[in-house]
Image 1 (cartoon, rainbow, N blue to C red):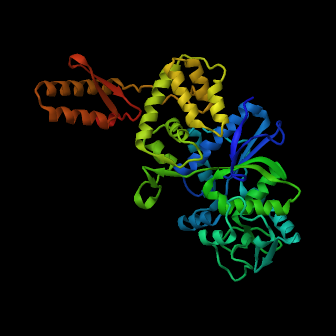
Image 2 (cartoon, rainbow, N blue to C red):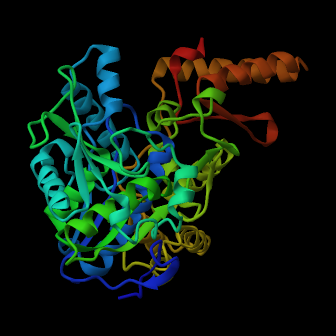
Image 3 (cartoon, helix red, strand yellow):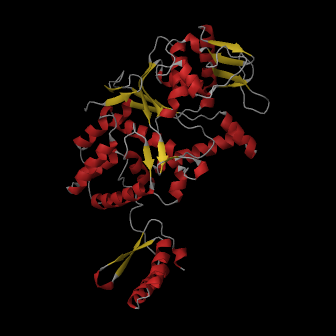
Length: 454
């Protein structure tokens, strides 16, 4: 078994990973708030922790690893979407969860072992909240229950920020019922139009942070191995999770390792709807960018570094994967290449693993390339997007006619007409490869649309 090393946000160092129980390795990752499509940044976290899940399964056995990723299905954003669309909240969350699972499956991500939904754990959230009040770490006021940040001396240790820094860098809700501006909500009242549950403090709903503490404890107990998410969750969400769980269950140590992936940019700029570079996973899939290509691009940058999504990277990834699929189409996967495993074991060094795969491809080691690819969620037998599409007889005849028209135009030195025909074929998803002797070959790409042939 390789020596797994992971960068632990808690210690700010790369450490040897040793599970609390090698027969029961446990990882929890914060999942989506389900009111809209998952964007490309969400996808990065999914691919990062899917890779870690695959590594842990490889090292400890699939039956000995439990991966939990939650759905936040009660949230003010969901409530607002329901009000704006006049739709039932349950319909919105069910639809969005279906979208999410389908889009993540397109990225060849394995489904987690457990996918708890927040609304199934309201009883546990209320119990933790009562526990925190009884221990002097929370207080009830005006239908709210708030966590008393000053009651937990280690608050801020994960993010490494003082309370003053956290106040300056966060949108802190100022409310007259708070003892301190940093105190955060565990429970809040609901009006007649807002989802709510009975509680000792009146009809209401949970705050955001308490849900993960409840679900983690229900499935993993007081102590477990790995907690992950994007680094935008480090504060306040993960900082608040630690505070709640540590104070409610001081006999445990909560997560041994904390992993956070860096954020994602698009073409060198922060992803933003206002500048038109905001993409959901579905947007890219609808642009005929295969999920395997998206995964490859996401794996090409180390999770601990900011990543820039570019069309050039996607094009290069597609070219590489087409070559690799062609190379391994008759291969039989064997033992996983030791260098690939060592790279991934070294703090999920996926760029290093991909570099090794390039070496294997160059050497013609098809069996080893296939096993490495499948370990990383690539080159699977059901990933057939790379295979050339075929045109029916009518489309084939039209393509031949256009190729002949282009050939004649070039012979007549009518290069403008030749370029027009090439553009028409390209718009229909057909690439022209010119060969010696004036011959041309039409290559049907994944975006082939015969309706555009004219």
